[in-house]
Length: 487
Image (cartoon, rainbow, N blue to C red; front, side):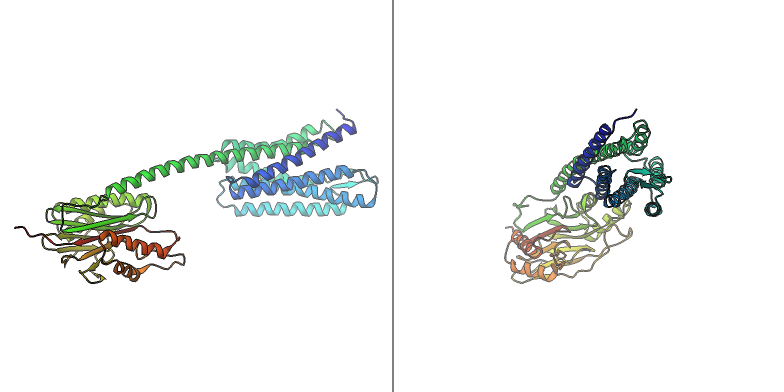
């Protein structure tokens, strides 16, 4: 079947104009897309620019084909060289795109092969131009294929074969729709060449290339959007679960104040601000019996959900041992043995635990690798109590802990904290430190326990300002008021 020259030119012009418009719109959409992987977006942008260059060069050649003049002849050689060169670069960029979504572990050899093929393609075109081996123009400046025209398609065809091998062997986990779209892109130009042989002069190859590229683009964008929506739903679900976990964790810690309004012997206040939705720090305080108050300050290794789960287990184990009437050293020893018995994740927790005898003010305490407590005698300043540290809980199964005594008098305060306080950092990565902490404490030394904690928190916030908090911030302050004498 043979079309007239006018009809053929009209059809080709429509194909080319439509291709330029579609490629331009796709390029703008890809540039504006926020869900595409950066690597995929970059490959698509370059590919569409090359496709635009290829179509534009082909259009320029058709418009100038057969026009007289030496300048036109030189321009025809240039735009034809650009057209064929762009075709090779398009094939290379599509191979890069296929390689990016494949599961090839070591991609460097393949990148070298593709780069070498592109260099060979360029070299063949330069040599072919010099000797009129690939294309030529007669005296009337009419385009003709030369005897070695097949060389212009050799390297792009090899790249297509490489693409097919990658799709067959290394893209098993790629979405089926994306894989099908790649196959459409690989097969469509070949089908167009076969069909084009029956319609002399009609450039179906451009229509097929643009159509297949747009189809591939639309499928990848659709799958990326679906993956993004799925990720958003999953993130929303996780956020809901984390909020619930944070609420459960907060409910496990004493949070009603005044905590023991019926007990005038002491005043106590504590707070925990996790760096994430859920944290690994915890505090606890409870009456073992009518005359003994147990105080706990602890810091679990790690952050997030694993630390929170380990924190809950540790808190329960410590409380259960304390309620049996054991001494602080024995509580830590037995808790350590229980945690080490089933600690496959090798997590650990630092613990300071003390038992205050309310009738006498005697505080018996043990320290498992935790921060030094801070003590203020009535009317004096807050000072560190540099007690002897044992090893962390969960580290060594047969570890035994020592304990010590501190005598609290009416008006004395004890401040406990985790490392999130002294290690709070500002934007310049300077730490708050123990000295600033002591200064903050002494700035509110006459305040009740709640006021003491609020004063320290203000000092920490003023120091770190807008810097991100990387560690949980947990504090406890207890003031011993003394036991009332019964008559």
